[in-house]
Image (cartoon, rainbow, N blue to C red):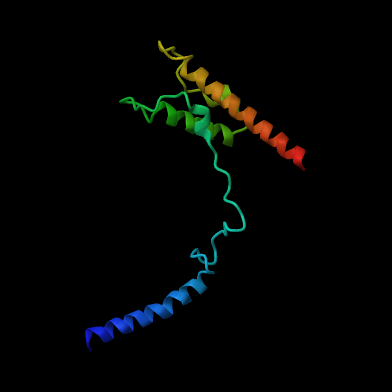
Length: 131
């Protein structure tokens, strides 16, 4: 077979398979089982980092993660365990004051968790008022 004939056959095969694949994928390229974001918006993201903005993002040797990442993890844990008080959630944080920083790691954690719970409570009340 000549090269031109091979190219023509390959192009013809692609011309037939591409529309068939588009129809099989429901036209959106996601297949049958996935959510259709064209009609329903994606679920809202949880922005726990918002409550930890003042924390350092520098890694300290010998510690797991950064202060910021530990704060975000604690905030996510607090959101999952609503029955725990902010003091219980922040139980393992250091209560030693470091010069040049506002408060201790524990107090900053408690403050951010309390703010998270306050914002969640306001959001629930807002949703109930709309209903």
